[in-house]
Amino acid sequence: MRQGRILRKNEVARRSGGFPVIGKLSIGGKDISKKTGNEYPVSYDYFVAKGEYASTFTSEYGDKPSRIQVIFPFDDVMKVCREEVDGRGTKDGRRYGYSYDGVTYYLWDEKEKDYLPISIEEQEEQFEKFTKQHKVK
Image 1 (cartoon, rainbow, N blue to C red):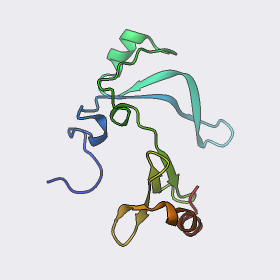
Image 2: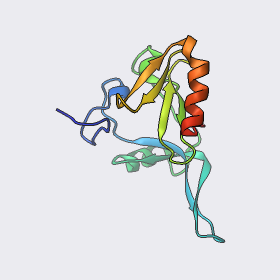
Image 3: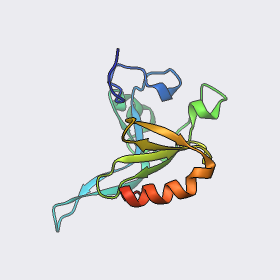
Image 4: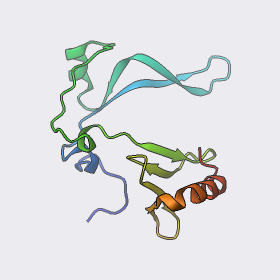
């Protein structure tokens, strides 16, 4: 039995529709400031493949592809292209809440050590209190 919420490399990701995650695409990275030496985020106008099969992606699409073909294995949007609203702490970057549909929200409950749903009636009051307490953005 697996412990914790983090999936290991060889596990099948729950949110991937049952398919193993073999790589990821990004449209950004990190650069280092010549003045300060600090790392900062940058965005690209092309896709960057990461993972074990990145070289296969690059050989098919080139070094800086700006367009790729995407095929979804299911018609169910929640399985293939789910959008998510995410609330994170401004000081620690920790994820304190999320929503997949903009109607049902889940906030981290320290006592339960889990994300618990909050009702629409509770949302406005609870959000205000929760975001102030955890400095969530």
